[in-house]
Image (cartoon, rainbow, N blue to C red):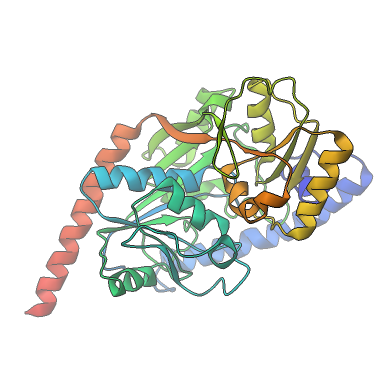
Length: 382
């Protein structure tokens, strides 16, 4: 069992055996210290001891309480597309996490020309995925998110709203609308704080959220339990349900492949997701059971050694193809001609319910904030 898989077991309370219980107890003690540090930091922001900076345009945060696997990246892209249709000019901003080279350097991933500029090793795979999910909308990576506006302006572009992929814990920058994406394929209440589990903040932090996006409706076994659980911490937050829908597959070279004939095929799986179990469950509902799943850690890199390993496994196991997600494909495309057949799962993010209420919240809040900026500018000029 890999270290990532072992940690996922602990985070879900699935310790098995004395060694895992001892490890869980040690990580649990560290988790208590972590909880205290998070509480102190949040209290410092709440009472004004730590400064909060305001961006020159409204800020929409699409974040999470956990380290990943909640659908926040496709949600941020979907909301940016909706805001464009509603008359806004969004700028999507990610942190660049997972970039191998100069990850902290602010960069425009796709700008006014909407052409991707960098490969994933320089901006992270999520930034490239954002650019593909929201074509025509500028995307940037920057640890200090507001600096992305200056990069866009330098190219002659402009934005009326920042849409942050992640950043619910990035409290140094004021958020005007804060959304939290949760993975509803898990039962509510499941979740332990780092380093014992995968949660960055406790459930009580949902009180800062203006909206909750409950993702993977199609895999949720008890929606009412989730509604009750969320209402306990954020009773006034808008609640939205979303799901993944499946389309045809494609190869790394872009050729479309139908699902027909794959149910009896010998398939492998390579993926670096925070919650690969949800992917396996979704595949099983499609009638697909990979005989050789390789479940890497979230944001796992892919290099020549990995390409050699997939070739060897495909030969030894007589695999007809490897399945990967769109996020994984970003990293595998450079090796497309050296790999066995790789089929990319075409999964689309869709809102199921509550999106109209969310749109009303966004339009009202972003309009109020924009007007406030105009008034502040007028006062400053007099």
